[in-house]
Image (cartoon, rainbow, N blue to C red; front, side, top):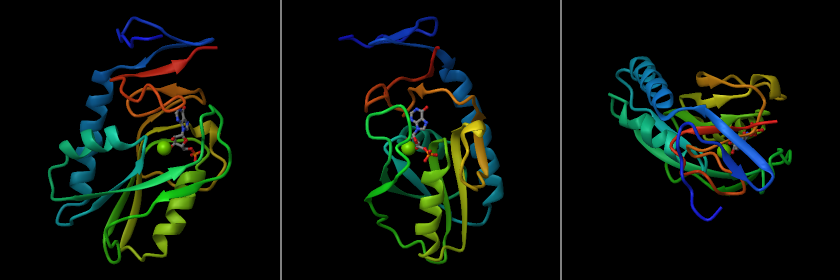
Length: 187
Ligand code: IMP
Ligand code: MG
């Protein structure tokens, strides 16, 4: 496919895989507004630091904080775990550390999707050593049936089946992050 055209009624055919529309731009944006309202309420009087997990969470984090009505800061952390595959490799590497000092601060880890929970568990362990005042996790998507690690996700946009999804920051071999809506692999 040389050109990427996206129409809500359209399938995306990528090699031998067919992806079908799953969450529309509208549905995603409405849910993000609700999540942002909840977070703004929960952190009233505080200045939380949103820590986006690169690369996937950058679009979600950007739309989320545009809807946050209290003062906040942002930073990014980069992990690598999937390589170019659709299945988790089961190990995580840190590719970029934080730039800010989270000691004594209220931090909210922002993920695009929680699958096995390995990335979140790893991040929580790292950030805990920096002694934040509080730490919560916010993920646009969660696959509850895939969870293997004991993690608590405080803000969840959508619980979804354990199927591979792309778009809105989520990639397949680094591509398709630029789609405005989310597509699911059809089996
Ligand atoms: P976990 O460490 O197994 O929870 O995996 C979380 C990471 O895997 C996410 O931050 C994503 O980058 C990636 N991931 C998990 N499921 C999907 C998917 O369906 N599409 C694209 N990336 C995914
Ligand atoms: Mg990710």
